[in-house]
Length: 274
Image 1 (tube, helix red, strand yellow):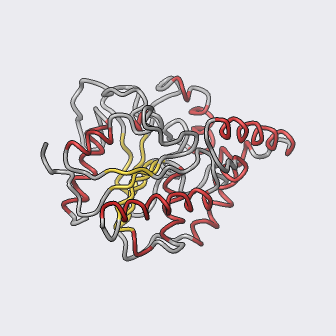
Image 2: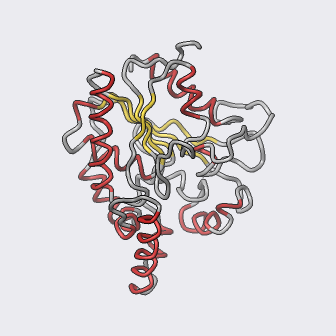
């Protein structure tokens, strides 16, 4: 084992919408073990799959406090995917500023979605029924306080604009953001219906989140793979548990194996003193 990822502060990984942190079906695939094998001290947010930003931030706060208790560290580095990035931003602006060393967001919808704006124009009863049905399903899967309507709302551009005003990037905490993109509707069968819709209303995207919405402070660019399919919202968290292609990256914005991407992100954080 080398110590390339042996950070000064422990790493808290915060998942996105629709999944939970589970021991035997890890949201992050091979990534945590790869980071641990290179010295990182990895922990998880353990928030609800479809909880509100505020409610989930409260759960993440408890997880963060437990990390500090276990390790004795004064702060954590947060690595967040998708909606987890919004919850991390809320947390740093609501009482946890002094307990966070850095925040890295990956495919987080910082600016909402024109696509969701369009979908929310459906009859109110239809939207509420979909939310209630999803809440019940997620409650059965383990969510303590599912709030699908809250999740829908935070993804609208109007609510996102207000959220950004109320939760600015802290100037004295290092924050950075990354975006990924697919190349077409059939890049990933999971997003064959959503990709063209998001493409129509929001432009380039990973099947769920547009590259424009993922753009936040210290933006590190839009990443894809050397293969034709690109990298989807699920690929970013290693859903398939394998490298994308045997082709070597031809540029800094190409990724052949998502595990290597995360290792490099954490290595850079270490080099910066985090």
